[in-house]
Length: 424
Ligand code: HAM
Image 1: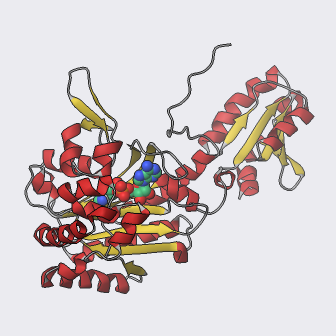
Image 2: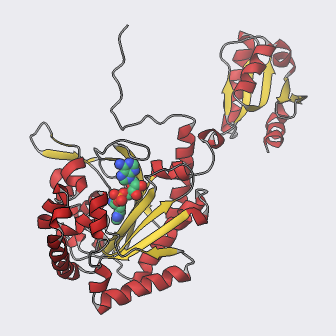
Image 3: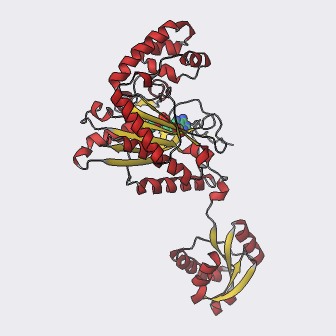
């Protein structure tokens, strides 16, 4: 027998019942975003590679090790998007969006691609709900966005106590440059304890060393100078105001002065959300984001401040309560015909009931009543209508309430009202 070629490693099919939980998440997320006046943005999954190199950063794990990059048939290097911010900024600039509205709020839901070591909560095709806000630099914007993200997680059923918000400020690039010098001096003194990756980063991007997962490097990092300490008064005051407003919004958070995030475009406020709910395991960062006030300018637009975040859908699903089955929509009505004449009667009846808003399945293979009822129960239908020649001639239909185990004879004209009552 021929063997089916396997799916690509780290890329999953999503089918029922899991897809119901996905749909629930997407619907709730949209609801929260739309309530905050965000509008959906849909960009292509493929971009020319330099967009990601110039925004995410050349010396980042994402660009150096994880991008799906290849030449298209015209010989131009393209990459599957590893994240959504770069594309949103490209759109913002090509659309000269700043001419259309002072503040732009966009969100997106879709697949991202990173060639990582696949494991629980870490995939090669994963999905994000992302939000980006352009044109407002006020600290209240940062606080409101973090609060919105928390509201979204609560809306998805995560207990508020299981959601841990961590924030930090990276300050302005000029402040980071001074800090970089301090870091280089520190790491140079501990060079022998760094791994190859970190030694290389010492030359190219020393801040990345703070993000290392190597236990030996983590130990070195414990003594490294702290960025918050080297920020100037305006950056520190701004960060204090963000914290004050988070407090006013009732958001519990912690400041982690070592939080750096893995993408280069960030400035000022950055944040991550971990969850202790569900069975997330080690990959328990469900969302991350921050300001990127210089990115629009560096990609050819005017100096427009911006901030955003992305929520990992797969990880959030693992943190949400209930198994996928519990998110499956119930089947309202099942119609079972006993013979072909009954099927002829039942088909337009089914159409009329669907138009009236019922979720309905019709059995196309006529069978005995017992077999039809077994099928209805298996589908977990709430009501079953078994139709034979008596029903067709009399127009009186037998409606079984499968939850109560009762049945009643209902004239066709009263059917919708009866079903509605039963399904309420
Ligand atoms: P990120 O931290 O790279 O940020 O990703 C955001 C979230 O996506 C992570 O917290 C995680 O939940 C999920 N995620 C990332 N990689 C994987 C993976 N391989 N498998 C499963 N889930 C994953 C960004 O992507 C930024 N674009 C966020 C942002 C928007 N910053 C400003 N605007």
